[in-house]
Length: 221
Length: 150
Image (cartoon, rainbow over all chains, first blue to last red; front, side, top):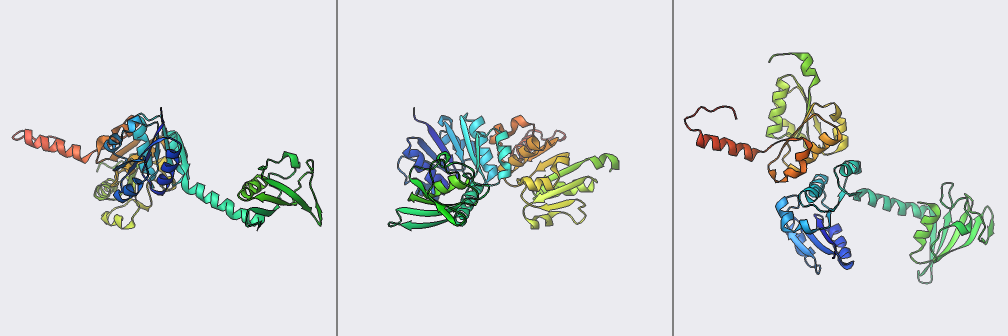
């Protein structure tokens, strides 16, 4: 039997999550208070949409939440999200409940109240942006071949994941090679047992889209 | 009031939501000499408090853990959540009860259908519709009889 997922509240996140879950073969239902949002959501093929306040038991009942395997609360309000998860679990016996929270200090409390998975969306996005902002400081990238290839220069800090490791111990994507190590005023072409030292600058050649993963693997960010 | 200042010292009530009910409650408790703190996210809401109100006020979101910490919720003998949103009141009550172990937690709820969310946690709830219904029923059936306590 196909897994049934109910998404309660939210709009942009709900929309992309619904699309992605449908593509993976889940049966997806969305509950949203706002009629205009529902109209836009209803344009997604095979998506069931219910208009209503998902914190009210009768709305959840109309949407057959009792048949769902997973309920995900995506409203902007933490209090609403908790009530949604609690209702789904206790009244409709949904096996797994998932919630986003806007304030990360509430995460332990949500777990304690029996919510199965809790994510702080705001925090996740802030971390993501920070990582990418920092990445730019740590690495200089030069696109070549109509941007299909990136040459990147990465400084290895003391705390970097690659510091002190041998070349063949580094877990890098296949699409990436370390072309050169700059150490002091010398440069060398590394072999498998060359050790990366803090303060080294590595020059990588990567096919497009793999450079970020490689830089992350090296720096440990 | 039968003033036993020592006994009253121990009581510390936090009220979340300074609407008509919250403000009146705060005024009454404060007049009785109890320590009271009332929280509302809008500062204008505190205008409803009487000029003689002797308790504290705090502007902030009552569902915010840092606001509750600042209000020293761990020292509260009672938390009464009377905002105009049921879900907020449920949230505050659960966090007060389960996270901060407040001995006495009371929530005002307009809609009693969400009972399964909070019933197992020992939270006292008051529902205006149910109270009104009982009172009206009493008025209808109890005509001529003596009107006792609610």
